[in-house]
Image 1 (cartoon, rainbow, N blue to C red):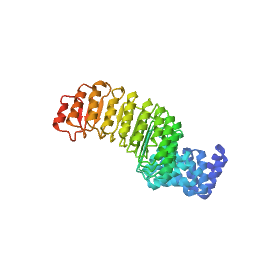
Image 2: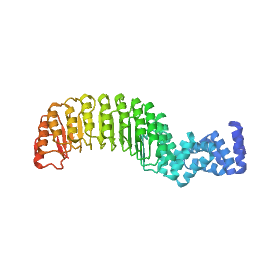
Image 3: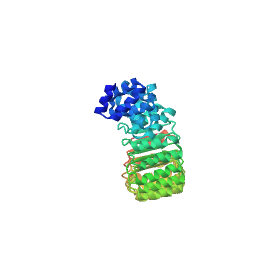
Image 4: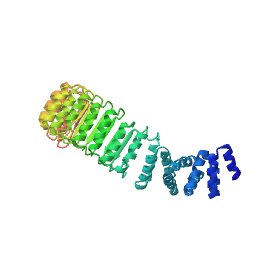
Length: 452
């Protein structure tokens, strides 16, 4: 060994030779092991493992054993990690005792550039699951083959938020991020969403039932002001409240990329929709807006209708079970008469009553862009059908009409069938419930009529 150490000193450097010699005095076998490993890991790493061995031989030997049994590159990486953080090195090496070599390799790669993130991933592995931790580590190493991160009921909480946010920022290939059922709470949500301001390449984000609130919504609104990549955002079961919804609306007004925005049970109020009226008036890039199970009521619906009247980008608007009434229906009727871009409009579960339905239908005498209208369980009656009888032959752009028939008479449906026969409709969908065979026979010979 002495001759070998002399050669190291002559051909490499005396510090390395001295470090290995110090180890050899304590443990000849370990000194020889370092010399044997040097051609595989390089003399800088050999010196590093000698320094580690001088402080903790119980860590140095497993590092060298990892190289001999598995992979020298992984061993070299972990030697560099252990040099800076011996305790973290021990944690990573110990994962191999259970045969979890993939975790050793991937977490070791993370630790080379981000010690704190590696510690957090190990904690997630210990408290949640190692498959989850390995997946997160792969994302953190910017694995180009992984473009979608799904966190479905993983048991993650607010203490894991920083790690998730770092991964969102680090992985330039990550395009879709879905979080469902984890207890991040509002504090964790604001941290995660803030990553959208820091160079993230995400194009879609779906956040469902995660305990997010006003702080998360505010962070998202701020991110929208500067983010030029995100195209789709979907929120469900979140306590954004009036303040949070207004923050998102404000960000939307300044955004020039977001194309789809969906909310369900997120704490909308009628007052909050006034901010969306202004956003819709100024935003020209949003293509789809969906609001479901939110108490907009008439005043909120009127705000959306007013925003729609001057909007030049929105193509699809879905308002499900939002408490819209007669006033909202009339306001939408006025907006549709002048709107030139909307293609799909869905009012499922509104409480328009018959007069409201008729107002919407009559507006299509002037509208030249809408291709699909859905009014499902909206309290409609024969006045709506009489308006459809007049509108359908005159309108040349509407292709799909969906109506529930619970308030229609046989005579009213006959008017609809007459109008449909001379229309441009390709698809007429009518709810079968309550319709007699005689009434359905009114549509015999008409293509595209479906009873559902």
